[in-house]
Amino acid sequence: LFEGKVLAGGRDGLMAFDAQSGTVATLRDGAPDMSYVKALLVDRSGTLWVGHRTGLARLDGSGWSEIAVDATTPPGPVSALIQRADGQILAGGEAGLSRLVDGALAAVPLPAPHQNGGVSALFEDARNRLWVGFSSPTQGGLLARTGENWREISTEDGLLHRSVNAIAADSSGQIMVAAGYSGRGAGCILESPDDLSSWTCLQAADGLASDMVRLIAEDSHGQY
Image (cartoon, rainbow, N blue to C red):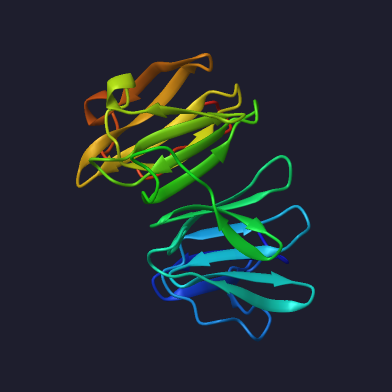
C-alpha cells in the first residue's frame, strides 16, 4: 500500500489501484519506462522502490528518479528488494546481489557458486539473519548469513527443490520457503532456527494444489 493505493507490477510495468474503490489510479507524473516489474518496496521513510528489468526506480517527495542496471553487473534485472533492520536496502536480481550506497548500487560478494547467481527472494528474520534465495533449478538453493558468515542450504539439507520463489516467516518465527520450477517443488518450513537442516516439506501428495509453490504465507488462523 502506497499513498492509499494498491500497487501491482508485471510485464507491462506498474499499475496502481485505489485502495477503497478498487478503480485504476495514477501515481505522480514523471515515472521512468518500466517493464517486467518484479519487486516493490516501501521503505521506512515512505519512499517507494520499484525493481524492474532495466533499473531500480524511486518515488519520494521530490518525485521520480532511477538507478539504471545492466544484464551482467549485479544486481542485473531486479527481482527482489528488502530493507534490513539497520535501514540498509538490498536489491537482488538476475546477476547477483547489491546494496544501496549513497544513491548507487554496490555489489555484495556471495560465496561460490552464487557470485552472479539469479537472486529471486530476500528476507531478514527476527535474528537479523539474512536469507537469499536463488532461482536456478540446478545451482540455486538458499544462503543464510549471520554476521559475516554464509551458510549454504540446498536439497542435501532437506529442501525438495533448489529453485526458491519466496521466503517468509510465520507468527512463531519459523522460516517458510516456496520452491519449485516447471511443476516440481514444495512448500518447506524450517522447524528449528538453530538447525538449518530441519526442513519439513509439503507437496501435492500432502494436499497442495501443485508441487511447485510460488508463494507461502500464514493466515489469521495460523494455517499456511
